[in-house]
Length: 234
Image (cartoon, rainbow, N blue to C red; front, side, top):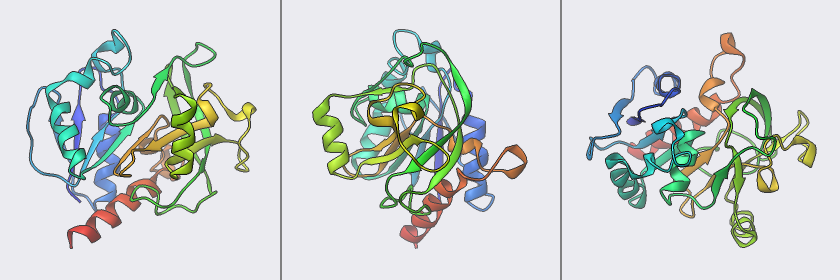
């Protein structure tokens, strides 16, 4: 699996993403691509990590979406390259038009940093194939603007096309208003684009890939990517 991690000024989870991808790729580290680079070597996967790109000025992800590197990311995504967009990366992907909707301020207007439970809504993707539909996993979140918002038609289309990847839930997998920590419409924590090669999610699976650091529930995502992309390459 050949991967690249895009680094923006203000990224702070790029190293965590690099560690998770290196572990999944059997020790092969991904490339690090600076936001100002208009081109970079061909890869199987591009990761947009968490953080506070450009200090979250104007609107989270709005400035980063116009970085020189994002023109190339969008071009490659249109050609089928997989893109994993986490937290601030999810915000950037939405602002760049790679994914529908937008991330607004949390309903409580407070920064949230803790472990949450997610229900896996589909295993039909290169990102979630290592999970079972309906499985509950626990991963951290760390965001102030994670309230996923989209119009009713978009939400219906996401549901009808099996493009909702994860929903906020409780430990038993129940999805309810009480488990919706940030106000996201329909408890949505992660979505796919129409072609299913772009995944955006607010929680941090890269921070749940080591038992020493609290758990391994996020590693299934990286295993799924590594296995599917290795198989495609062979």
